[in-house]
Length: 95
Image (tube, helix red, strand yellow):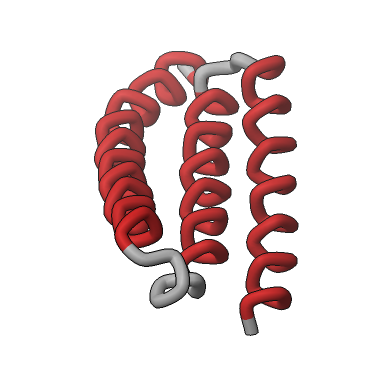
């Protein structure tokens, strides 16, 4: 019964995580376009870009955790941590 309940909760949670990832993807594309247009004016967008990438990887990592794909989950979690650290460094450098 427990296995059935967890699969059922993943069915409810999966589309929500997909919609969150779509929003993060759109935000990443928009901030990337701002950076291409004028780097000097929008230099503060670099930490935002890395932070959005880290959040997107964390949501994908959580989804892989719920689907019991541990190898992929670890890789995505490590990428999220690295992007989070890069976001902090970029914030320190741009301020």
